[in-house]
Image (cartoon, rainbow, N blue to C red):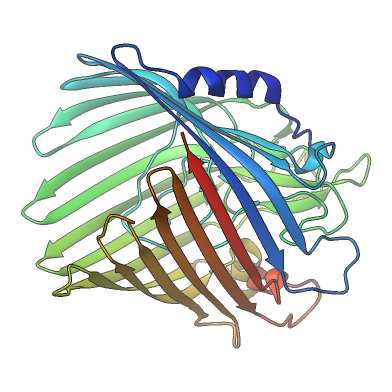
Length: 418
């Protein structure tokens, strides 16, 4: 999968963005040195550490009811700048729009349909950068045309997505890759007619209705798209190269958020009906239709010094599939998370998050993490984190979180804001 971006064009655009000052225009530029180091293992096919340089450019335009937003990120391996496989370029947002009672947006967009912090069954519109943290995966912009109309204390929106956007998979030497030492081929898509193709053009759609009632926010949705969240890795029938197989799926679901004082209760549910391979596609097993549900709650305390502490508890389950199928489809197929977030609410914007994810079905699987963020002066920020993964494989091949066993890591990101 070719990952080499047009870095020269992107960096030239960054210079324009950083100097944007005309009426209605605002631009920003972030330069980040990202370091990641894993606990050393004996696998010579993967690297235990990396140092990347990331450039993120933001450009916004507003004039009366019109707006334009562009945001993109480019990453390059600072230790081997000639290694294009370890180079990324992702468009997160790039669209123009009109906002009033009637709203229209055209271009690359990021949708936020979730109610929960960690487990998010309904937030599936956007593809993901799987070469990121497994408990908070980055979104990739989805090209679409969106139309929304306000209705009472909410509204209804419709979205048409003409192109399939594949996930961005880790490089073959990454500790996060599903197939160490092997570069994945381009995706195979199973369309709604049950046939395989490699064409990224496909008419996908989504609709959503939202409404608020005295502390209760609800949303329901329906969509048909190519699922990027439960892929299968299969061998190409001609070359034997491992390739992601992504199924067309119809999903209906909903979410709610209820706020009462310092207590917030949340929930999401998604029913998924996968396309069935046609008889002309021998050897392809059908995906099990399934239901993914998640519930959670949070409670916050304010301290005299102005600090704030928030406790978050969530649980998630995948229903309608066998125990082995659940583990094969999802990393967190039946899990619970306990997290504590502490905000200093000071000029440095200090924040610390402690979290622990426990598997409720597969014994002895655990993911723990700690993250600390703060500003340093007006132009710098610091983001440090550590993760511990314990999930010894119970069989061959490893399933779910087992594929990440002992991928214990520390990260340190230093950003200069322009």
